[in-house]
Length: 293
Image (cartoon, rainbow, N blue to C red; front, side):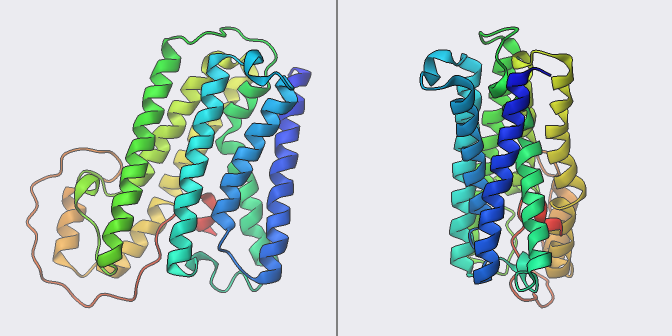
């Protein structure tokens, strides 16, 4: 490991930990979770900035490769969009039910913030590596960079469309499930977009690696996919939806006909309006890893 990338990885981790620790202290004092997701986005942006400033100094742009500029920009765009969306949603709902019975207990509450430190560091690990490298195997863009960019843009657009359409739908249909628009083609379209997005980011980073050990950053898309598919994303959302809508024939038909993980055409639906009583307003599923706690 070169000194440059090693120091950058350490600096990113320390800043990541410091921001989350300070935010946790304020959150614990005021017993609030409302800026939890927003703090994650701010931390991503802060870590990007410290990587650029430490590694490239005052004359940042002239010392960056096109790949590094694109990586930094895409992470910031993603972080601003997701953080803003989740903050608006929690302010509208008045609370984040993930933290019910937790935010009053500082020790339990701290676990969520510690997990967010890990989420931030591992999810963007290939980005921290490439931004910290002081030499380049291939400074110019190559075919794999374009593949990564296309996948990232696709995943980002899917995620934005899915989040926005569901948010608008819930404004007037708070106790119903969405099965129109992009949700007609995938039951977890937002998660699909998130997984593809980070896979694209890793592919974009490949030609920015300068040593074989840096390919260990494949843990980033694997971590995101494993978290979403097996821990805190789909399993929790699936259980919540089954509890709310499991007795409804139209939901069961939608569930049987619609692809779970990938965007694809649904089987022909036979929807009925028969339903049982709908429980109280559900908790919106979230993509960050702490939702599993």
